[in-house]
Length: 339
Ligand code: PEP
Ligand code: MN
Image 1 (cartoon, helix red, strand yellow):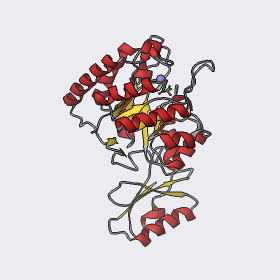
Image 2 (cartoon, protein in one colour; image 1 turned 180 degrees about the vertical axis):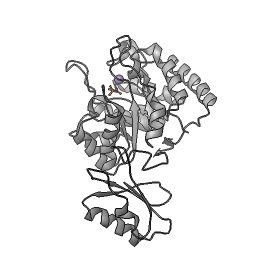
Image 3 (cartoon, helix red, strand yellow; image 1 turned 30 degrees about the vertical axis):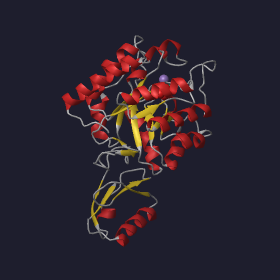
Image 4 (tube, protein in one colour; image 1 turned 120 degrees about the horizontal axis):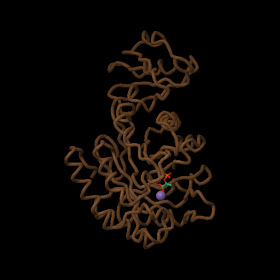
């Protein structure tokens, strides 16, 4: 249920609606960015009757929300969520390029990559410090040292940093350094982690789970937003199918549908989505043409020596070409670019 207040509603009338929702045993959620005050109702198990709220003073209308995901849906919040970070914005029709290594490996690797991607138009630096690896014997990341290197790269380039948070135990530490917290595919339904980042209030990028439906993904995002944090970005990074030529199957078909269903920004990661470096640029072009708010790509100074995800890493030259092509596609489809 969404309750839209009239533009002349008083603070007392708004408070009375919130009290009424609480008295009924439900939770009021004020929707940010709305032109007039709108309050989403959550916590109800079955559909609510609009008549419960329609006649309260100051209420313009009460609208039933048909989907199980509520606060992330466009029904509840029609305008795009835009996430503002130092000097850049994600969502609302701009195109943000996030780029950097899969893992932070050394000072030199991180800084040279950061400067290169910055020079060619990336606005957000990615890099993993806590790595969720399939094998416990594989490189697990430089941990806090990796976070320090990312902070150093941010200082030098001015780029905000996105890095993965693997668990609630390390959340405080990672949040101290990160501008955007990435929740990896393997953690999409780690509900304690989702609730914890929801309470923290920092921007979060939620990757789609390895075999998750869009509905499960949106419900996971709902966990974060329901704790009061609307700064959530969705990232399509490929799903598991019967196909083995690519690492995952990049599900670009859901991009236009997500646009209709949710107000959250949508980013596509063609690096994990294909697992093949030569497929990354073409699929980035396709993602931009499909109307995403951003892309995330992995770049490494020497992919053959990368400690994780070398086969999908772009070389510096490949990244430069990718950016030129992205620009051309962006102009062709008419999307403004994030500054
Ligand atoms: C990553 O971005 O390096 C990563 C581990 O991604 P995913 O969670 O999509 O596998
Ligand atoms: Mn990776």
